[in-house]
Length: 178
Image 1 (cartoon, helix red, strand yellow):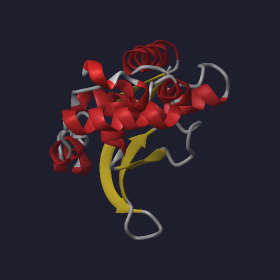
Image 2: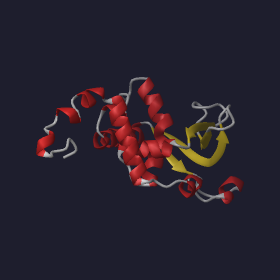
Image 3: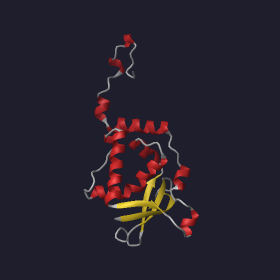
Image 4: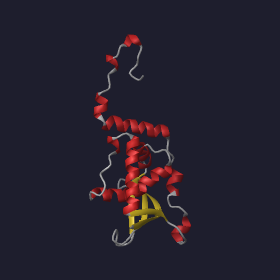
């Protein structure tokens, strides 16, 4: 079984010079990358989006998903794991599915750990992910809004089942929101 070790988190921008990214830097086996390094670029806004997609409220739960994404994408692309489309299911189900996939990955393919021990990079920050923890917080209202947007945009069947206000009995005073 492989071990991917997170050794650093860098900040950068996209080619446009404006789109902010986190770069999670891993030490990986040579069969993954000949130079022993793997860089995974994560849009900074992905922290909030993963919280909304998977119904997460804790930054460490979001980071657990993000640091495993490279592995999950690979396992999904070769058919070992099914693709996960969080927008096609409710957040609780999406959370359960991604947790199961991460557990499968840990048990059978690879583990992801943060750097331990000493050395120049290790001395700079004890836990490389602390950089992201310090810069991000999960706003529960914002993530609920994002989840509503996901549900509305990507679940047209549910949206088509809503009864417009004009079809409700206005005399009864019953609003479509109750």
